[in-house]
Length: 241
Image 1 (cartoon, rainbow, N blue to C red):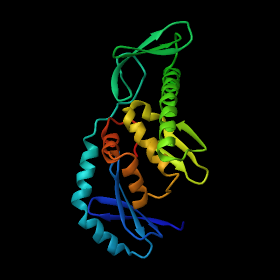
Image 2 (cartoon, rainbow, N blue to C red):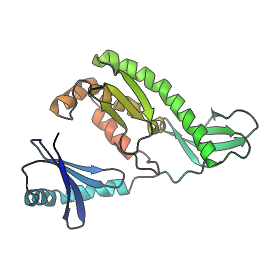
Image 3 (tube, one colour):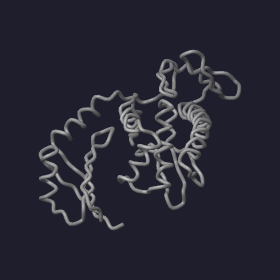
Image 4 (cartoon, helix red, strand yellow):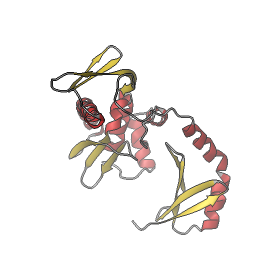
């Protein structure tokens, strides 16, 4: 697909513009920082796009303010007393040092991170991320099987990885799906929505009306779950969908 990009500014608003061989304009304000993105047909001039942006300034500012008010998780040190999220619930992290194999357990509203004495921040983070990955894999495997039955298609493979700009992604041609490790911290229905969304891309690559009609059929409340996912607590890294 032929594309070209540029930057337009209207007052204090800067918009990244991507021209593509498409029919309609698409305006997005992306979390967590409220970056403005415009996908535009190739033939539209800068003046036309500036007029379009000027007509949307009120809406753009509303979206930017919403993201600015979102709660964000502070930089992590992986020490006792920090908040720790799992499946949409907040836990207190307790770090225990024992000369045994590292492990993690949940006791009430506490996540116990057991590591060997003198484990540094990178090691503590590695143990916690490994546990998140293991838990997410168990839940995602069940959900992928569910959507395979409902949608009638399945990826050739699916994987978990840390991503800074996507909750999930699908390679339509190879039929491979990736989901964001950060989803282990979100409510299960948010993970369910992402898996449904990416699996639906196996039927339709683009985010067009056909794609949305599929999602309306498979998961009527998908818009609510998408909104919830984008307004739940954000990591100190730039996660968004």
